Image (cartoon, rainbow, N blue to C red; front, side, top):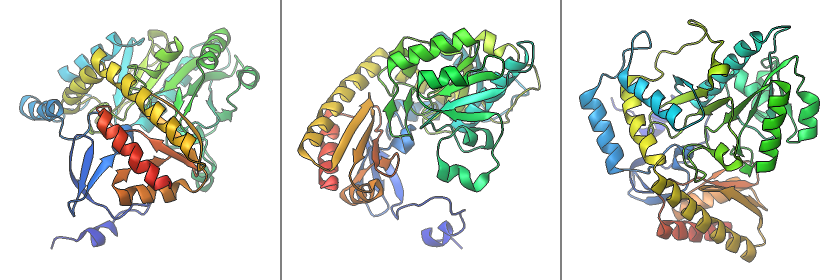
Amino acid sequence: MTATLSSASESLLGVYRRPPAEFVSGSGVELVDAEGKRYLDFVAGIAVNALGYGDPGLDRAFRDAMEGSLIHVSNLYRSQAGERLAEQLTEKSFADRVFFCNSGAEANEGAFKMARRWGRAQGGSPKHEIISLRGGFHGRLFGTLAATDRPQYRAPFRPLAGGISIVERDLDDLRTALNPDTVAAVIVEPVQGEGGVRVLDPAFMRGLRALTQERNVLLILDEIQCGYGRTGQLWAYEQSGIAPDILTIAKPMAGGLPMGAVLATADAAGAMQPGDHGTTFGGGPFVSSVALHVLDRVSDPAMLAHVRTRGAELQSALSDLQASSQKIRAVRGTGLIWGIDVAESAADIVARSLDLGLLICSAGEYTLRLIPPLVLSAADLQRGVGLLRKAIG
């Protein structure tokens, strides 16, 4: 017997608060629900669907991967697509080595292990502590949860993993916290997505990079949400003119298929030995084949210029919206990732937007978050801001 949507949903673990809409198809930057209603999507699967829906090139990449490669062979054996993808990522970044996994949280866990392995190889007492910043979100696994600044997520699962602490977004506090004898790494989001869409100041990022180099501490940048073209640069760290020791990426990598990666310098990765880490599915031939296409698209200078243009237009439109509404307290962001501080519950505005046919999400109790597909057109941008204006009221 085929289960109805309502009865089937009762079989799922109740960890999500989902609206009743069931999306069944999409085109461009729109989704269509089971009743035929169309929605303008400013969520993009939480920054996953960078190329929107029904993209011809992505559809072709899926078909080619199905026809031209195996789905899975495991990391016991070589995968040409995975090796090509690693080569492309190193060519387009600071990195020398790549480790593939299945999600952002897994990428950050892998980065933590790499940092501790590196710290153990530095001589003296093992450098093992991981420092994260106030407002950071790095995942919900045990290690990453300890680095995530969300009391409501952390409290039910204490005691959390040890050796991980959260420090204010302040260089003086970091100078105190970064003991060169014990701290292995600092992890930072250049744009704190879940933390209210806070773009960390380039001067702060440069100061932090100098401090970590002075103290012989690895700098891990978490670009799981803000990387892969979303800021108008391929990597968000480029906006500060720095490079990390380790970079974690995930969400849009494989066009909606689960994929993450840890990128690292030869020095940071050098201590890792066979057997130190692993994953069954990471970097398989099918997902890597699709990911090669996505990387080619999001790294295209024309695509990055498009994101910068749309980002400037969105900034202007949101600034106008703020000027005309007493319900908006602040607007901040870059490229196509923006946060709007509002004077009422963000969840209420998200719900009203849904009714109007606009998908947005929150980044805190009083912050709205806009993360549309990178292929957003100027017309859809204006239409989305118009619907948002109605939802805010």
